[in-house]
Length: 267
Image (cartoon, rainbow, N blue to C red; front, side, top):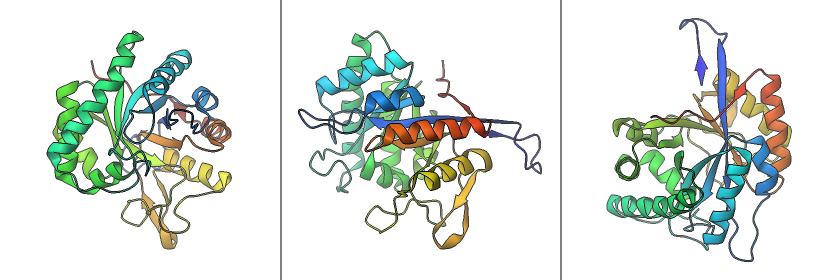
C-alpha cells in the first residue's frame, strides 16, 4: 500500500506490503516446496485446501506452522484439478464456483478452529484466479461465497482485476496482489505460463520487480513498456528455492524501507 501526501508527490510517506506465499501444496507421500523454510520470511500463507494440492494431514501441519511463525492463514481455493495442479481452465458456472469456494473454506476453517485460530483471507489459485480476474460473474460468485461464509475475511485478487471489483462490491476488504516472478502484459494482466519467459527465473530480476511494485507502483511489461501495479500484497511462489528467494526479497524490501506486515482483518 502506498500513501502519498498529495496526488502530485512522487515520494511515498509510508510503504507497507504483505508478503504472501502459496503453501501446503504437498499431497500424500509427494512433497512440494519448503514451507518451513519460507515461513520466517512471509506474513501471509495461502493454504491449499485439497482441490489442487494438499490433503487433511498437510492442511493441519501447515496451519500449525503458520501459528508457530505468526503468519496469517488464508484459504487457497481452486478448481478441482489435482492432476493439473489447478492450472487447467474448466468450464464452471458461477453456482459451481460459489459451492466449490464454500466447500474449501469450510475444510480449512475446521483445522484453524481446532487449532484455536482463525482464517484471515481467501485467494483463488491458478486457473480459477485468472478466470475470476477477467470474468465478473465468476468473481461475484467467489466473493459471495466468502461474504456469506465470513464477511470479515479479506479477498485477495490480481491488482486491477474483476476479482477486486467483485470483492469491493460484496462489501469485503480486498488486497490487490502483485507478482514478483511473473511477467506482465501492458494491460496489467499476467503473461500465461504457456508463453516462454512468462516466469522470471533470475532471482535478482524478480526481486527488482517486487521492490519496484512495492515502492513505485509500477514495473516493466512485455515490450519494455511500463505498467502501473497498485499492490497491497506480493506473491512468493512456494516451490523450488522459495525459502532462499523469500529471504532475499524480505531483506531487499526492508533495505528499501518497506514495512512488511499482513493486512488488518476487519472487526
